[in-house]
Each structure stands twice: as structure tokens, then as C-alpha cells.
Length: 292
Image (cartoon, rainbow, N blue to C red; front, side, top):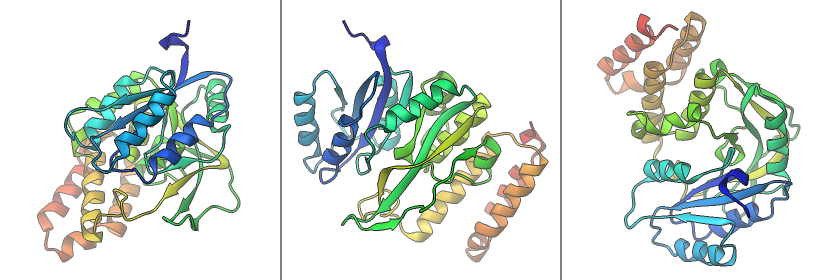
């Protein structure tokens, strides 16, 4: 008899109004060829476009493989993500949003094999192809090479080829504590903060496999695609302030963070006469309490 303890990977998919895309995501999960058991946990946040019906059809067809978590009302992406993580029982969690999809049937096997044999890594990612709504390629790295990201890399903005649909991470409290932090609901780029938090809280690294195994869809219905440029910049600055307030770093990283802020954000603040906000950012950045 198969039990929860036998599940090695929980595929975690949050979705809202992805009727046009969700079937392709689920097919990418189902095609995975592994020598271990995996479950598919889908968090549908009360979609209104018919996506729920599509998911239920798949669940009826694969009742032992697919779990569906949904409530009676829309709770937002943050609560939906936390709910679905709580439902995952696998040793590892693989992430993929409902509008992206996997392209390699051995993706999970390759990533799990790596993590099983490399205890110094908390997460394994890979390269991805960026496409538009018509499947035209917008970007793909022609010559993938292995990459390693440390906490300090991620802290200062280096997160090459670690998009959500590429992530497989160790399902451990040291990582999932992020979803219970009081400031979790203030995060805009949860995937970015998850990578920073996972490496910070465990002292482990992220490995990027030199293979393209997923597609990231850049479309008008995407979360970031719908946000206007100024609003998106506001979100980036807000997350930057969360990072400098809730993570510790030493002087070499302080300098890099300062340069990043000066290069990327401070002109945006000053042009809008937000002197106080810029001052507060610099104050927190150099607050001695943040030094580890």
C-alpha cells in the first residue's frame, strides 16, 4: 500500500484563471518518468474562467496522482501558496505556476538525483525558454553552462536561470518557515525571496543544471506582465527594503547592495521627491543591527 511517506516529490502548482494554459502544465507533470513516486498538488484560487473544471477533469482521471486544494473564496496568491505548501508531503517540492510548463520528461528525475547526491545544495534549478502567447521564443540561452548561486549571490541580485518552473527544493522547515514570517504577505516576488531565504536559513547553495527543461510564458495575463512599469519598480524597491531589513550581511555585501540601489532605484525615488523613503532605505542598509 502506498503511503505519504513513499512520495519523493510534491509538484506544487498555484493557479488562477489559467484555463488557456493549465492543461499544458498538468500534462508536463504527468509525463514525468521517474523511479520514485510523485504527487501533483494544485492550488486553484477560485478561478472564474473555467480553469477549475479543467483541473477537476484531470483529477477524476488521475485521482491517485492529483490533489486539488481550493476554498470557497479567492484568498490571493500568498495564502494560496502557503495552503498548497502545507498540503505537500514529498521529500522535495517542485514548483510550476499554472501558465508555465515543463518540456523534459526526465526533469524531476535529474533534479532529484542531483539533490540526493549533493548535500551542500538546498535547491536545484535549470535553464528555461521564454516564449510569448503564440509559442514564439523570446529568449533561450544557446550555450547553457552549470551555475552555482550562494546566499550572497542572490542577496545582491544574481539569480540567473532560476525561474519558478525550474525549482526543486528540499521540503524542510528551514525553507518553509518563510511562509509563516509576519512579513511574508508584504513580499511581491515570492520566488526571489524563497531562494534568498532558503540559502540564508540553511547555509546551502543552489545549483543550475545546464539544460533547458521548461517554458516560461510571457503574456498579458501574467502577474508581472499586467503591472505597469512604475508600479513594478515600486514592488522591486519594496522587496529590496524587505531584504535589507530581514536578512543579515557583512560589509562586502553592504557595498554591493548600496551600489545596486544607487544604480537601479534611487533616481526613481528622487525624481518623485521621495527623499524620506530613500533616506530610510539607506539607514536600514547601514544599520549595524543587520550585520551578522
